[in-house]
Image 1 (tube, rainbow, N blue to C red):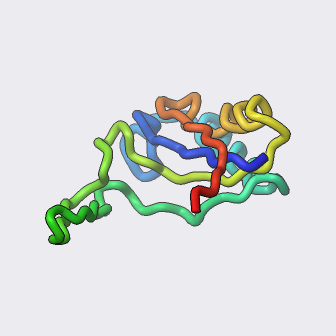
Image 2 (cartoon, one colour):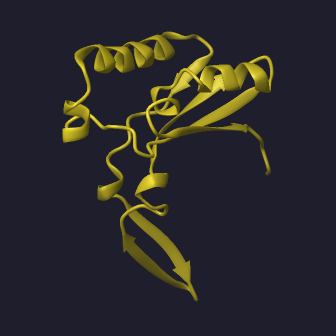
Length: 119
C-alpha cells in the first residue's frame, strides 16, 4: 500500500535558527542521521526540499478572482516541512516509519495518509 507522510514542523528547531544552535552536537547529528537513513530506504521516496513557510504564497480563487496571501495556508505551528511517499505493508508499518522522522519527536508531527486516486 502507498502512504503519504506529511511532515509538520510544529516547534521543531530548524537549522540556521537560534533554537537549532542550542541543540547539542549529538542531537543535531542524530536528526541528520535519521534523515539520511530514511532517504536511503528503497520503499521511501523523499520529496524535494521545501522552502521556509515564511516565503510561501497562498493562492485562492474567490468569486472568479485570484486572491494571493503572503505566507502559508496554515499557521506557523502547522507549517508543512516536507513529505515522503512510502510503500508499506499496512498502516502500522507506515506509522512505524513516520515515528522515525525527527519532527515526530522534536516538537512537530507526521501525518500518515493512504494514497488514493479520485479521478
